[in-house]
Image (cartoon, rainbow, N blue to C red; front, side, top):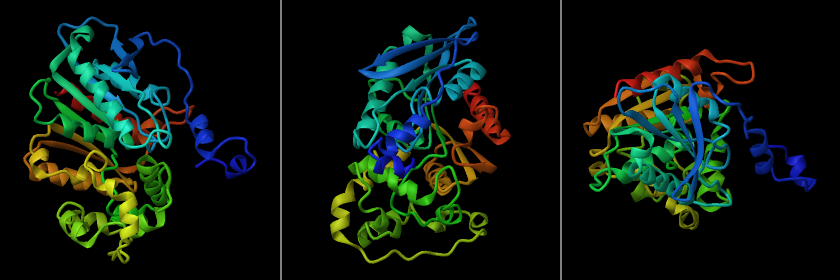
Length: 353
């Protein structure tokens, strides 16, 4: 979360300092890719196109980076996007959406949606097959990909999405006491309290009610009952509860907190809460989860909802993975084999479409 001493000294905010640390280094040209910075509907993007000639039109993947809606950028996820474009021989568009807390919800979602629609309307300029357009994202970017996919489901004036790729996505803010949140509450790179902190910063530009949200006192009993069919430990396979899970009873409901955070229940922010009629229209899906990740169960719950509604799901679980591991497949001399395994599975999925 940065260094509090810098904030107290008036040097810079914790958020600004962490952004600096995570900004990513500029990479040189890629002999296998053409890179182009552009704006789609006013939103900054970077387009990655394979240099090698193609016999036909390519798949096109719109990528939304993670970082809790507060951090990271096109540059921070450059290696991931280059890898996917090179190895899958597809066109990748990385979206530089506006960040919170300066730009609160739904700014990031709107930027991602508008950039995607622009791409869909102009795919002939990029040699992309209208029948193979994919939305993709990691962490908060997985959240944004799921929300964009839901919005575009059932639309008739645009090409239909071929698939969505959700990499350890955060999909709900109703229950921060699911098994994975308990088991991995102190595991880097995303600890439990920061998951709530990020959601609230994106929603309101502050995290004033973080403790109440973590305890579960921000959701009215009737809504909690409604969401229980979608967000419940009962829907998590038993094998994922073996490692230190205790059922949690939410604290007493606080209406004044709900008033401040009630938009957390909007599907564009928490896609797991969308109605079945929308889920049934979603495209084929790839979901990657990691065992040592607070967001593991968000992915497992969404997998179940998709499958229950007849959507084809390819699920890949990294038993030795933790949150953010995809970005560490090749990081400043360090490499985590699980991260590369996950990326290779994503590439395999894209090539199979």
